[in-house]
Amino acid sequence: MSDAIKHECGIAVIRLKKPLQFYKDKYGTAFYGVNKMYLMMEKQHNRGQDGAGFASIKLDVAPGERYISRQRSTAQQPIQDIFAEINNRINTIMTSNPDKKDDVAWQKSNVPYIGELLLGHVRYGTFGKNSVESVHPFLRQNNWMHRNLIVAGNFNMTNVSQLFEKLISLGQHPKERADTITVMEKIGHFLDDEVSKLYKKLKKEGFNKQQASPKIAQRLKVGKILKRASKDWDGGYAMAGLLGHGDAFVLRDPAGIRPAYYYEDDEVAVVASERPVIQTAFNVPFDEVKELDPGAAVIVKKSGELSIEQILTPLARKACSFERIYFSRGSDAEIYKERKMLGRLLMPEVLKSIDYDTKNSVFSFIPNTAETSFYGMVEAAQDELNRQKGEEILANKDNLDPSSIERILSRRLRTEKIAIKDAKLRTFITEDSSRDDLVAHVYDITYGVIKPEDKLVIIDDSIVRGTTLKKSIIKMMARLNPAKIIVVSSAPQIRYPDCYGIDMAKLEDFIAFRAAIELLKDHGKDGLIDEVYNKCKAQEAFEDKDVINYVKEIYAPFTQKEVSKKIAELLTDPSIKTEVEIIYQTVENLHQACPKNLGDWYFTGDYPTDGGHRVVNKAFINFVEGNNARAY
Image 1 (cartoon, rainbow, N blue to C red):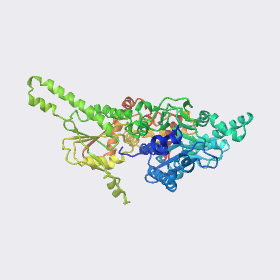
Image 2 (tube, rainbow, N blue to C red):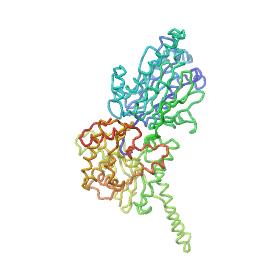
Image 3 (cartoon, rainbow, N blue to C red):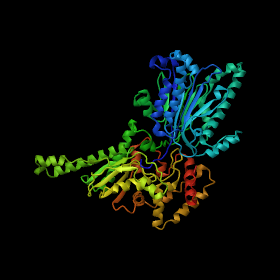
Image 4 (cartoon, one colour):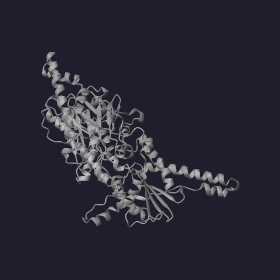
């Protein structure tokens, strides 16, 4: 992706189902869980590099022994920083006690992080603070083991203010407005309530407080707590939690916006944000890793028993399509095929743009995530070249000799690595003009492969703001003096803000929105801007369910191709004489390529939750009023 955008986070949960001695005997270490968590977090570092966190819980420890460990970091390489600290602590203790290297019981009592229940999180700070205090997992502490709650999530709520007010109405005094704290306190409130009710019931049955504690662990209904806590949540989420006595859960939002996958065997129960993470870490085949259904929760009891419970009524499935286009690792078997298909489906429009002249066209991609869709595009181009060869052979079948057949068959598609992403250039210069010159060199180019008659086709996975395209990529490509530059986006035009965890919150940031506004002005229709603004203002006090996305009217007068043409104008510096065309994926083709991930609100404005309509409404008001704030 040429425009780097921060996005949602990654979660990992491991429950070791055997005693720690089992892992020592079979794998040579009682730190098996810690090692696997490191691997799972590293394999999800694509999902977050601003911060990382780790927490573990030891089961069945004696009173007075620490059973919860947590480590968080916002260092430049936070995952490595966390596990360097963990390893340092472990090694210091073990070096001081060399006689205990095989004593698993002693290690469990005296060494931190060695628990049977582990939670990992990698984070992109989409907005707000990025201090270590804002890094997951969050801990809600209590002297009652059952009331300790550790929460980490891949999520964003659209209605944090409303949730905050509901906490106040429950008599609470939250220490922050952050959605993570709000969510944790909501779960914590109903956890406390359920534990209290169970204790009263057990007291009536004749159990004292000490006797009641293990009974509460057995009888606590995590699903019931989640149903009560999540009733008013509006957003996209995969919410993971650990309870102090040893229960664990991961709850997915009812539209399936954010991803979650799980796996279980007789040794472990595991949950992660991406399937290949589990496949790689535990060496299991594709079909043994299951996707968690929308609105459902994976619940693992202290006993190790795993169950899937439907917590919320599913909405229409709108799994985030950006997961397939860009965010998730392309090593997932399904995602790899889908990204190739995205490239393949663009080829008909590309062929029209190059006038079917594959001989004088060079195909390339913008590193690094667009590479897979590039392969799909090239396969489709190769199909076209083979069709042309077949036609030429049939047209000249009476006059063919070995040399002419060889000439036809030897034609090859021209694919080159044109764009090369350099290491990040540090900007010490403050003047805008000088800084822009540095930005222009973020990408380098390969010289000597483009002829003046060549059309250069280069694919990117998406175009958000277009800044890097304008200031770097198109300028650098133009230096090669091709006859035409065709930039192809495997994603459709990004027209609307996201409010479920992707850092795309302001309309004016989107090159597609800026193009539509310019088109309205060009056609003397800019009065529509005020009309839409007035409609949005009139809805400010509406309930979320009653809000209509009137921002769609900004785009309605124009076709996708008209908007694309204006985008090309806006992204082409006046100094560039080469013709530039931009081709976008259609939403229909996106759905064909990624049939399981139909969440397309950033392209269509069709939000999967009511809160999304309020967000886009507010985003447009902010744009017109010149307010640079986020809409949620």
